[in-house]
Length: 83
Image 1: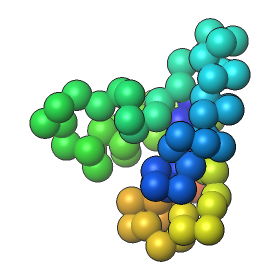
Image 2: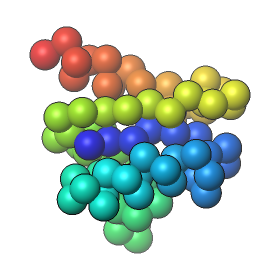
Image 3: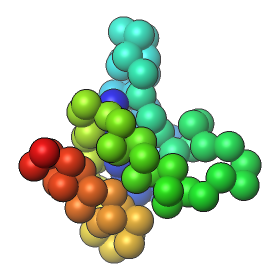
Image 4: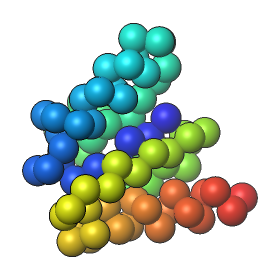
């Protein structure tokens, strides 16, 4: 499962609730702050994680659409949904 969210808005708040619940249920969840290795190409890792996820959940916040990365993630999620 892939969680997409604007870090500055929701990382230590709202995004923690679904992440904690899902991981407690033993569901593997990708969240950029705990699955990337130092030096790893972030964009490539995000795209790959979206492609590998059966389910992607965008957590829309006030500033979500102002982030290029979030919009890229959302576009990739929609592309994968069509397949």
